[in-house]
Image (cartoon, rainbow, N blue to C red):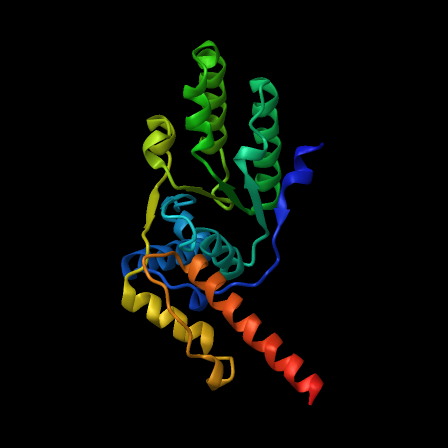
Length: 237
């Protein structure tokens, strides 16, 4: 399969108003957006803009949504690629696959979102016989990151930053940390999810110490069951 076929072109509009972010994270991301809106003016003063961002931490807490919101805010195409889908036993082939994706993002000045970025780090330690090959893969990735045009953005997501090669980590100008939401934050999120449904259906058992994605799945499962029950009751009336 052509590697380009594995890229997800996600056109679902997402705004930052829809994402619950810790305040410092929001400030950093808003600064990023403003830098790219004024990129040409900043270049007149020979100031670089940040375009390499690592989104790290708990799964289901908004990393993919953040990438979508950045692309939406900057009116750029979003290219989503899960690195676990392109790591293969022939490391040279993997390098070529990654290069093709970076080339496409560079041509389009797109937002490139690499999910499961730690797959590079994991693969490097899996088999001692392949250490040399994996080192070349990491070197290729470092070069691709270094030469990414400033008008393109690279966002990489990982749940395990501790296993990523340190040389790769140094390339990221911003590191945004995502943690499981506190109970009061989850309550606000539940209220937001439930607000568009009939009031009699909003009383659900709320779960805590879970991610936003898990809270959404639990909530919608209960609501779908209640709505279907109401549909069935109406059809029998």
